[in-house]
Amino acid sequence: WWGLAGVAAFSFTVPFTTQLYNSRITTGTVTNPAGKTLSLFAYTTVTGTLINAGTLIASGPTDSIRGTFTSQAGSLLRVEGNINYGHASLTFSNGWTNNGKIELTTSYAYDALLTVVSGTLTNPAGDTIISLPGPYNSGNRTIAASIDNQGVIDVTYPLTISKTTATYTNTGTVSISSGKTLTVTSGTLVNNTGTFSGAGTSGVWMVRISAE
Image (cartoon, rainbow, N blue to C red):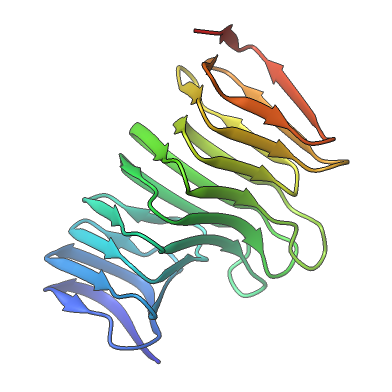
């Protein structure tokens, strides 16, 4: 593996397992190919373009992607709290489409937060957003974004979806495992032709509910 720390203004393709520590990629395109892993640690910001076809792991407390983000088919985005950096928080300035899998988890007992500031996080048919317990079944899993779910949201660990003025649209499947809870607060929930399944619990607070 290799690591990069500091400020960079160039394009590169990830050659093997790569870690960005407290880095700023200001321009250019970062491409993470299939079969490769790119990790963002400790206050890393990408303001250029990031294309992910492999595994992208965000484990820093305030990582952000402010430019264009592309998720290619079969890719994985993992927001993962860990013992070295604590809670994990990844913020996207703009909406994007998940063409693979999104995991919110921890390798210890910390939170995982995924935020989309403007626009919508779209989860197409055949793709998955999943909340995972980690080894200690601890920490919070939160998505702060407008969501258009056409695929699967799999709640295997308690998940909160919350953003003021957001719209949550479901034409896919929301599966809540037994003993787990999906909590939706603020915004508008639109359940068109979507389904909620599983033996778990869903709760909504301060949410406008619409069935279209």
